[in-house]
Image (cartoon, rainbow, N blue to C red; front, side):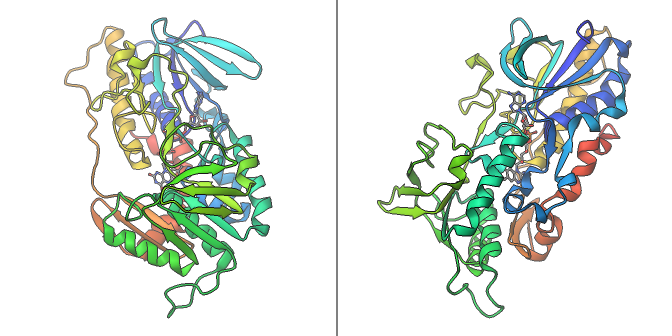
Amino acid sequence: MAEKKQIVILGGSYSGVSTAHSVLKHVLPSLPDSSAYAVVLISASSQSMCRPACPRALISDDYFNQDKLFVSIPKQFEQYKSNFRFINGTVTELHHEQRTLSVSVADAVEQLSYYALVIATGASTFSPLFGFNRDEAFLRASWTAFRAALPAARSIVIAGGGPTGVETAGELGEHLNGRAGWFSSTLANPKVAVTLVSAGDNLLPNLRPALAQKAERYLAKVGVTVIKNARVKNVSPQGSTNQEGGTFSGPGVDDVAAKATLSLDNGSTMDADLYIPAFGTRPNTSFIKASSLLASDRRVNTNESTLRVDAAGPRVYAVGDVGSYAKPAIHQILAAIPVVTANIKRDLLADAGQTLAGEDRVFKEDTRETQMIPIGKSKGVGAAMGYKLPSFMVWLIKGRDYWLWTTGNLWSGKQWAKEG
Ligand SMILES: Cc1cc2nc3c(=O)[nH]c(=O)nc-3n(C[C@H](O)[C@H](O)[C@H](O)COP(=O)(O)OP(=O)(O)OC[C@H]3O[C@@H](n4cnc5c(N)ncnc54)[C@H](O)[C@@H]3O)c2cc1C
């Protein structure tokens, strides 16, 4: 493989796996000598997972078919036979001037050169419960620790009034306390005190206030208390994980099951048997040392039209949550894949001496109100393309299985059968 021109893709989730399929299906066959190229997909996790399912999946394996929730990446690429290599490793340094990468694989560090590079390493959450902050073993271990502590918990505090916080509060509330009857607006005497702390004066800042207020009413039905206009300033003993985006030390597996005392910026303190930080994310870019490649929020400085990383030299792209070009969401990724594919194709053909007619393919972020938030197993709030959705539609589209119905085609590449 090393003597081939390597198109290296970093990250094995929505954006990396999709780009790899799309390049193998649509770029390689269009090149004059396709056997001279290889796609190399590098990911710290050897599996892909339906990340939006985490707020429900973290409670119990019984809620989802685990064979659909987690899928092996190499297995999804067996169909290509040649021109593809998967490396289960962590990229530790990008040397963009030399066009090489250092990759930690098992106990060794491998140096890899690239001809083209797609950065798709996404973002980590503050809590390890919500995705592959390291790999699948770390995620599983954090779920196991959390589940072991759950039966004894009498108070749970979740910080963050965005979708992850609201969904997690709704799932835990219904799982632990059940749901109030048809004629009651709140659940009386919930067994476990579930509290959601939100910095804003409304939950769900990406949705209109009326939907945020409806979400609050649904949360009350599953025994969740909402505290607004308050930020978690300090957490003991979880170090510096606060809601102000300050220094991050990151809770480990033990922290997800630990009691915590929280100081809020409204002057109050709270004790929690379990504490879940569910606010914000941090881009997985620690392997990029050159500040010229990073935006101020540490996402990769990406050309918002072409998805090229202009400062990194020719044939370098970023796609997905790691890029600065759009808000982090799966529908933005699905719209970006045909764009990045077309521009990779254009650049590789040009380098092979064939200039395509026309212009670069251009990405345009869809900024319409689009977000769906299940609240427990039967309710939800949301909007799509600017239109408010009834609770039943949110349940039907997302709440039943948190998008698991969509991931089969994504991981297998069927989604990208057409060039788009
Ligand atoms: C709890 C939760 C719920 C969500 N719900 C929704 C939803 O309902 N709808 C929606 O549109 N979006 C949702 N999102 C956002 C959505 O999950 C992301 O937009 C999506 O996962 C981004 O995909 P990605 O491929 O860019 O990166 P990620 O999913 O973050 O994956 C990054 C991949 O890169 C790998 N990686 C990271 N660093 C390295 C490295 N140095 N070397 C090698 N590999 C590395 C990781 O192991 C991982 O496989 C949710 C997010 C969370 C956390």
